[in-house]
Image (cartoon, rainbow, N blue to C red):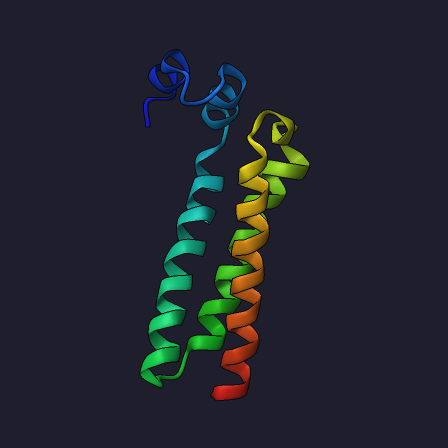
Length: 106
């Protein structure tokens, strides 16, 4: 995303743009790992394959790293819209739910 253009058009604030731009590559990789592992866990769970618990565990850990950076360590959580915090809570809750489900199913 071109954060400068998004801020200039009013889609995001300048402070939010700066917060996104200041996010290190390793944190973005944690986000990508969380997303990919969550998808893999879902495929494993609903196809009946082994590995769902591990995939959801990796997803939860990587999401924890990403959200801890955003809201605890970066100091930029206040510059992000409140909707992002709601999404974070939902994502982590759903991942935890699927992790618990996978433990019962497999």
